[in-house]
Image (cartoon, rainbow, N blue to C red):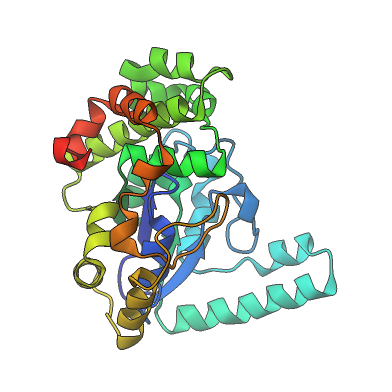
Length: 308
């Protein structure tokens, strides 16, 4: 039996969830589970649910397909037989048995699941209520988000928000017409990023008003004072801040690391303090103005004029 609450680390993609989730998972009480909502990482042993949308919105009315497999995930109850049925090689079979044994050890040790998944953001309320989870929500400046998507050449799945009527009804009715306009394929990555950010963080702003006991972290604040912010986060989640964790946080945020990376590359090791302003080099002045205009007024909830 786990001795504390399971943890969800979420936020928009490119908001620092991987850095924060990976550092938290260095606590000996936790088991890191990587993006069960993301079909690119589907492992039926860890989570047998299939999610029809990026950023699927789950509620009590739609939970039938998700509750049981996610309960197994959060309980660290590895579904060996599902993994074996899906195995297509001897190495996959061996991996399934190894995970079965590992998850059994985790349960016996009372470890807690830490789910790191930006695609779970719109289901965070349901996950917290159904599984009594501690929730950490990462927030990142809209221009930094847009600059990151520009670097990867990623368009935003605005159409997948529109395909979820309950999400529009419950959270995004005021934005649905704008989302429909910018979901069109002729819109730029920057425009789509700004509107997508606004939609996601309109939901987060509502979460922040209604769930003050959740943890909301601006990526920029963590990047500027990583040791302090992580120590506070470990304490808030009641997990052990070890020397190993402190050393790894120092390595991943060191000023000896690069400030930025070539297009398409990813790394947890950056000069975190200096990289906060990378978007000023990635975006043109016109693109920054576009992001600022399109992300308002939601951006004003999280950032003021000095952050631009």
